[in-house]
Each structure stands twice: as structure tokens, then as C-alpha cells.
Image 1 (tube, rainbow, N blue to C red):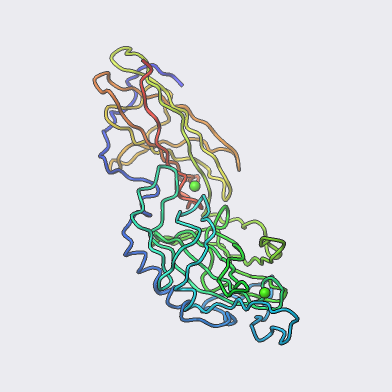
Image 2 (cartoon, rainbow, N blue to C red):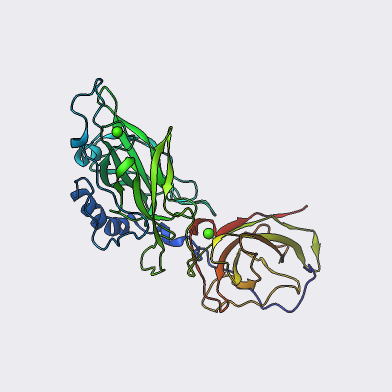
Length: 390
Ligand SMILES: [Ca+2]
Ligand SMILES: [Ca+2]
């Protein structure tokens, strides 16, 4: 791409400080989280039974039958050695110190390890702002519910509990608990979490069936706020094998959802050279990856240049930003399915401006420019390091 000055570009407005970010919606006040989650949490916490009854609106899975639920009543009455009863009531769980496995790296972050729950909640004190391109930290961890069954096939019942690390929506994981011989609550392990293609876990869908198989309905997309993106749900089963849970039933990949894609962006440094013709010039290379989901037909790149920085050269694609937006947007050809594409863009900065900034956001779009929903919305922005070479 040319680094030569040109007259072909419209003047670039300097963006206001508080410009749009792809993941802006996760930073809204925690009160909204409570409004969203409390009905679900209340429903699940009230449903302190063996998990046998389907949740309202829970469609019957077509491929995998829901087996009957094992309960503590099935424990052999006179074992030679006593197997601890791992059925832990919700009331006890809600006010216990529990060891929570780590939250997925590609979803909302939160504390793990030994956490003290009070009324089913661990509040996260003063989570800082999310780093560009990284998931934010949640405001609280909430126990959403529990079901019971013999997940390790030792004749006694364990507890399988669902947790969310919430901000708006958030990371979810399913964790099995037992009691040791001294009666202490111990963590058996994580059954499944919202990571990779798995972005949501349907509340109230967890069952423990024959053979200790834990079934749960998993979604390819998590809605937030007024988002109406169609989700795909599928049931998968997990069973204890050795020291971990492994998938034993259901699909291993999410199906095709024409509304959902997964793209991500990174960018190299923008190094501005010596002053030539009244400006310092430099280029940055933007790398866009398609992870999974519907392959975009085009990639929309939104640039937010800081003080004084503006596009340079004649090789820029047409700028398609509406006047109401800050920064500017261009459309480029997408990477191949599950592939990587790199694009180089030239900028210039007047020497009177000693330092500037540049942020880039990416979204995959349809042929007519409609942005697709992002399975992982946290990796679609990046801050470019801007520096001068001398
Ligand atoms: Ca057991
Ligand atoms: Ca993404």
C-alpha cells in the first residue's frame, strides 16, 4: 500500500474521547445484571428438587433421551465402607466456601479457587476496565441452581451446580461437588463451561441420568440486553472418566447458524517515520481471523484515530462511515473460512502532534453489509501502538 501523500481522502474528524467500542455493552451498571438474572436465579433456587422436571419452555431433546434421576434413595443401605453422601442442599451451597474452577479465558473473567458464597453470591470488588481485546471481569458470581445424582458411580449422590460470572450475561460453568469422609464439601470437577463454540448454558436444563451422565443444553450464542440473535441449542452429555468429565453424548460441534460468526482482530505497531512533506508517515498491518461460524462475506474495519492521525496514501478502500459515527469505516475482503487475512493501512501525523493513538474494531458482515453477531464479542477490538521511529 502506498505511503505517499494524496489528496484523495476526505478530512478525518478527530474522534471524541468516549467513542464506540465493540464490547461497550458489557460495561453497563451492575443493576441491569440483577434485573436480568434475578428471575432466573430465583426460579432455579426455588427449584431445590432432584432436577427431574423440565423447565418451562424447555424443548424435549430429539436425539438424547433424558434418563430418570438418581437420588440418595438409591444408595445401598449397607455398604462395607461408608461412602459420603454428596447431596448438598441449595441452602447449604448458597452459604458455603466452595472451590470454583477457573473461568474460561475467552469469556467473562472472575475469581476462582476457594470462594465464600453468601446467599448464593460472591461479589467481585471493583473490577477494573477491560483491556482492549480481552474479556471484562464480571461483577459477581451467582449460584444459579443444582441437581443431584451419582456422577462418579460409587452408589452415593453428588451435587451438580450451575454458576455464572455475570456482567450482562457472562461466563457459566457446571461444577460437581461431593463431601469427603469428614463431611467437608469438595469439588469433584468442572463438567462443562462456556468456552470456544459453547457460548451459553440453558438455565434449568441440567439433568443427571443413568450411568452418571450429566446432560445439559448448550448454545452457540449468548444474547445480551435486547439482542434477538437466533441461538442454536443442542444437548450434550458428560460423564466422569478418571479425574475429569468428558463428553459422551450429543454433537461435538455447533451447527451452522447464519446469524453468528466468530472473528477476531490484532494489529501491528504503527511506526511513524521522519517528517516528509509536512507529515510523518507509517503503516500498520491489521490481522483478521475467522474462527468458526458463518464465514463473513466482507469484513468491516472501524478505525478510531487519535489526535492528528489520519489515513494517508491512495490505496485505502472507500470510506463508508455514516456521518453520525466517530472514526471511519472501510470494507475489505474477508479471510477464507477458518483462515487469516492481513491488511496494511497507511497513516500520517503532523509533526506538531507528538503522540497519538489508534484503535481498530472488526466485524464480519453479510454481502449487503449487515454485521453478523459475534460468538465471542471480546476479541473484536485492538489498540494499535503508535510511535515515531526517531
Ligand atoms: Ca457418587
Ligand atoms: Ca469475536
